[in-house]
Image 1 (cartoon, rainbow, N blue to C red):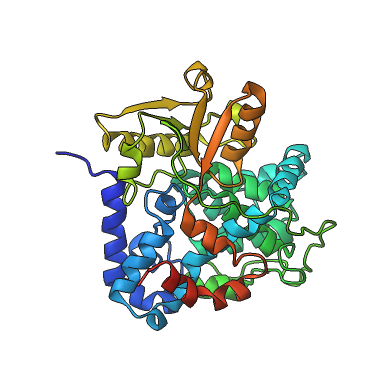
Image 2 (cartoon, rainbow, N blue to C red; image 1 turned 135 degrees about the horizontal axis):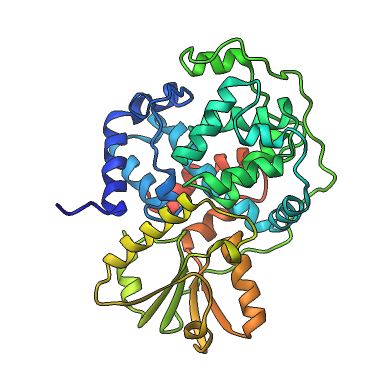
Length: 380
């Protein structure tokens, strides 16, 4: 029997979510009952973060079935991902500073207890096990986890964010880095998220209770403020005959014709030697399987899978690159451009460029423009 690809699986799961869970999403989304079939979230994040299914495709499918007002909360959550990316694109130094700080921190006392799930906070220990073994955590649980890590266990937020990137199949540079900063109180000055025992008990259906937490913690204070330092690029199109892309943008649902125009496609999945921050073996294997699915869609195409730049790329004079956004992959490309003196032509998605233009301030300002964005991009 032929195994379904992640492309077909993602569309199946999206349809099931729209048909069976979306109408109750706003009421039930914060509950983590510990079993996938009982939770009301979409579980699409691992597909979205790799481009298997795009945010815009999801929005279009949702708005085919529901009026905006009926599913406003879910639509906002999808747009948060786009907003975070745009915010970071305008302030890439946040990522650079985070990476530098992470690599300079000496693991403090208590880190090994937390990492090995041997703290005196039982729910945290269970979530650490789930994170490592299932490479996933419910979104509300991620907030609790981060809050406990920062405020109860008194551990550096940078190491917690690094842990999530290492083990989550849906690890996303912008969402992960900026969400941890938000919980800590660094992203929006004076606003932080402190996990409360009663809240965890309620939203886990009573699975955890009488949890000893630091519930009066103050927000962390940033020593650095980040102003807009980059202007957004302009949308552009194919220029060369050969293309580079990474495992975080494998969308073929509405771009197969685009890929067919290229003579060669190089797909890069960086190994840990080429990364700033290590990924677990499970996550690398998951990414590798996604690439295999992508390749299976182009049986007659010359697709070359690589773990790093080699002579086959370096000898090409001009290359198109699907812009991978601020993060590991873009850092690697910039280093290669400088090291090998190569010419890269970046291709951006016009939907992203348009949306990122509303990411200059906070999400409240972005949210006001969501109906306009939906109309402009023809999502309904």
